[in-house]
Image (cartoon, rainbow, N blue to C red; front, side):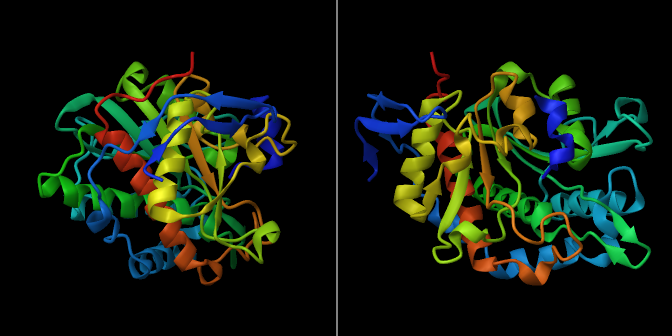
Amino acid sequence: MKSFFWKSLFCLLVLGCKTITRNDNKQKAITTNIKLEATDPTSYANTITEKELKETLYKFAANEMEGRETGELGQKKAAAYLKAFYQNMKIPSPSGIDYYQYIPKEFFSGNIKKSENVVAFLEGDTFPDEVIVLSAHYDHLGLKTSEEVFNGADDNGSGTMSILQIAEAFAKAKKEGAGPKRSILFLHFTGEEKGLYGSRYYTENPLYPLKNTVCNLNVDMIGRVDAAHESAPNYIYIIGSDRLSNELHLINEAVNDKYALFNLDYKYNKESDPNRFYYRSDHYNFAKNNIPIIFYFNGVHDDYHKISDVADKIKYNLLTKRTKLIFYTAWEIANRKKRILLNE
């Protein structure tokens, strides 16, 4: 996740009448009934395993990746790892880019070298022009010294590996003729730690029209437990879900009620939140283009942006369960009869 330094750069199956705590802490009654419409995808969700998440994250957050700093050798190694995963899973690249959306040096400020987003795509079988973006940034802070590495296991190895597992689950469903109805874009951003560059480049140079982008589910740090939840770790912070689409918010809650049973914590969704997390990860570049978003987040912890953010501190059971929640939500949105609605 982008640090405070960069913050200033971006100033039941059926739910009836439901009350949402809005960003300003006021209550708003939502009278639209939400019914989950998609077929039960539990068999595909169960391909998301603690074993695979652990194996892949230990590789992705290893010293050999040199901290994945934007434009540097470690980031190139990480990009190659992601590309190879999609190739091995036979999940195609968007036409004409061979998995890499290149970002020229001139797009960045300072001495940041040219870099690339990593992108894979599954075409929907009913509404192929409607695209759901599942995203996570894969860059981190690089090297502290020649022998000390910012491995970024939680930030954001956890989110990056969750997207890979979700992609594998969707690919299995598609291979078996089970959808998705809408297209899924798996988008791994570079340059987040430098100032949300990768997501800004994508939204300014989209591979698919922004008007056709249904929503962005963004995953940034979902492998740990913060101090506020040490005694009750069955939680995930949900940020931004109701700001542009109450329907998206209610779908996520209905999915959670049926499949995950997390405590969905909206503490950081308030517009008055002094941390301003809504503005500090890649979803924001979609939100400012009027695209509904959900930001999934575990909160900060003592190892945030330190060399001690390592793979053996990840809570893999929670990472697995949180990844499944995101998959279930994406599945429902991808397979509903109608595209989710924006707020009036």
